[in-house]
Image (tube, rainbow, N blue to C red):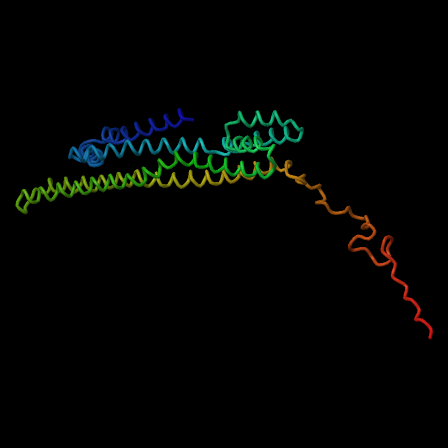
Length: 286
């Protein structure tokens, strides 16, 4: 999975580098000059500080894309709450192979396997201890899963600040040229500082918007999968609950056509098993 993410990152990197150059080579005359100027405007704004900020944000964007793809591949249902793990543990518990179930859950790297492993290790302490173990393990594993995703949140919040730094620097350069020219600067020099300011802001947004988008998607995905894993783990340990056997297909209701037991609620008066009515005693004669 990491290799796939690395290949996608490298592919995007070379695509970003090759596209403006290829466009510049395919055009002729003035069009070639225009494409080269567009490349310089977005990737080589002219000022060394502006160039450094732009290329840093460009590399940060590539890292963000690769890391986001890796997170989407890593946090999936098949890796966190696999149906095969659920079916194997359920079969072992039904066959009362508790030691095999404990060993299987201990060697399973999925989120569901870790929850069941923590619960089965507390089986000797009762069902309440097993439920508590699932909750504690779920909270710990969820925090561990969310910790790497915070990297996307950091990128999404820091990138606009880096772009803003380039914006402020570009405006300082523009006003410096304006002052140095005595209020009548060369428009090309003045435009260079303003271009640096706008381009760095643009790249800051290019990095921040996808980063925050992927952060929200991955975080919501983790929340949904961990909640599903908690439910699946509780279903697996339900046979350990006193009286926690699964109800029959009729839901515990009497079969159709069978009368209620004698004396049971709902029986008709006078039915077998109902107590006889008391006979009134005759009044004593005077």
